[in-house]
Length: 403
Image 1 (cartoon, rainbow, N blue to C red):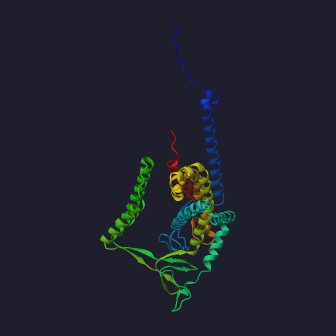
Image 2: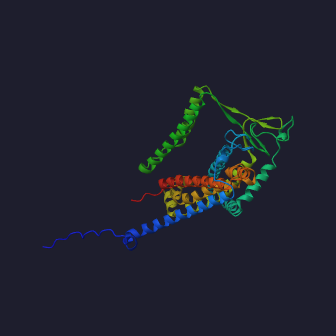
Image 3: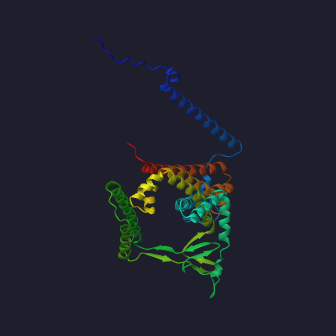
């Protein structure tokens, strides 16, 4: 009778760090990490030594000093007597604002252009092709300057003055001028928070309902009408709370007083130029991503859906786009990152983003180039990693689940 037993385990020896394939990769990674830390330590020590030789030190105390300059477009309170830290915060918020608006508008524009470029209508398909080729092959800085020039030829505010003005407000509430666009702004009274909270809950309920209806369609083949429940959830709860709370949210219209419009919401010319240019330029790239994603789906699925009696619009919404998302989203992440990083071109039209405030005026006034550039790098790194993380989570959620 023969008995089989496990071979005795070999004791660990230092030579196994090189000779054994189980440990060799860890050994080289550890050596690379040590070399990287040593290189960073050497460069950091060299930087501090050179600063000390020049009579300087590495410090961020300048962020607490008065900034001494004005910023026109801002989302938070700020004056020229505010600190450089507050100026930096204004720049950060302005960058996030234009990045958010740009990503939203570019996505809508890109999806429409990408779908319409595959249209059977010859004229529409060619127009979308012309848009994509024209905007994708010209630098975004050129488009920023062109749109800024177009906005600059709009009427001056004084053209709206007098009994027979040269220009009139759109719908009596919106003024387009060479300084920007003046819009009605909401005013918040007691109880407005309850109305806003109800509206946000309604949006969440709509998302939950539409996902539930889609699951019913996929699992049981039962189609539920989404339009009327969506409209009801969107308007009815918010309006009921609005009137119950005594109409706490009002509207303030812009009025021409003195040399300019006062009141309302002002969107200044640099923000308009930067926002539209980034949206239209990046929308052309997203349109190509959408077109590639749609063409990656087999035509047989379109034909099979059509044989079931589905119309082209429903085939696109229910069959093609859900599958195309797994092809569209990875390059879409890169386009969102490009919008955020290209927003640093704002200085060309005088928009006060983080590059213009911290990396421009603050840097020149304080002479703290290294500290300012390090903060800029850290900001863009955090924003880029955040966008990538969020969209990768969404990409994993819509990816095909294989057994």
